[in-house]
Image (cartoon, rainbow, N blue to C red; front, side, top):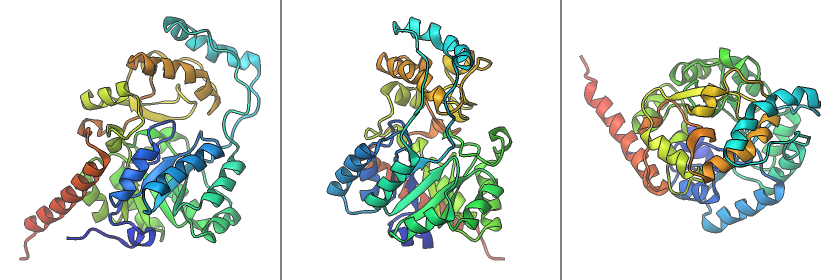
Amino acid sequence: MKITTPLSEKIGLRLPIIQAPMAGGPSTQELVAAVSAAGGLGSFGFAYMPPQEMQRQVAWVRAKTDRPFGVNVFVAELPGAIDAVSQRGALEAVAGYYAELGLPAPGPINPPYGPDLDVQLAAVEELRPRVFTTHFGSLPLEKVSSLQKLGILVGGSATCVAEAQRLESLGFDFVIAQGGEAGGHRGTYLRDPADALTGTLALTRLIVRAVKLPVVAAGGIMDGAGIAAVLALGAQAAQLGTAFLACPESGAPEVHKKMLLSSPEDETRITEKFSGRAARGLVNRFIKEMERAPSLAFPAQNAVTANLRAASAKAGKPDFVSMWAGQAAPLARALPATELVARLEAETIEAVRNLKGVLRES
């Protein structure tokens, strides 16, 4: 049995499986190359990456495989300079944690807070990946068209029907339905993230019926049964992030992988205290204790916690690490990426065959 869809064929994939772009380290060049070579779509999370490093990593992957891969960046509007008075509360809230790890207290945060989006988009046009996706927003119709003219398929995340319809109106090629179960940052931009937590199954079906674009389902999908389920709902591919975090090729800190593989059910929570935007991760001390503490807007808050997160990960302490993970985290498997893709394929076929076995004509 061959698992294929119009979208997977258009991209040039053997399987309708997408490794989610995970910014901040997990989506390494090794992971992207392995997933793409295995027949899925390996994806770079380049949100915080300068163009030179984007180019280096893409060149590395192209030297390993000629299969398609994807690139993702954040397209959120960034805040301007934040005055010292406004910063004081956020800096004081984390100062004790810095001292606990023997780090100097964090100083004021100044813009720019990350790479320039226009410069990143120019790099994408030069790199010409088969797929380019956005998170936290959309792109103007003219920019979408210019990317498509270069042979790039353009997709964007949507956490509600309105966001999917916005993408369709701007000429996007496909939409990623990010359910409330998904790990990492919520892509919400037209609503309050707290009001855009529809589950993956419901959201996928709603968006499939609301737009004519191909839909990719994302959130809580960890095995072949999950892939089969969203394909049955009309999705043309499944995007998995947490499922790939425990792979040896993943750049997630070892303490993150360890906690992921031992996490019990219902141990994730959405917080904006690490980065300034809502994101789902494994519950730890930082998430609990910072719940009511002041924080800055994204991505200034990300800069406030950066050294703390890095030091905690280096020390093997989960207390202050942003361990992004979806609600189905307990289903994670520490398998090489190639083996995981093969398992996912076999499980999807098995799930479809089992369903056929359940159905009986009257």
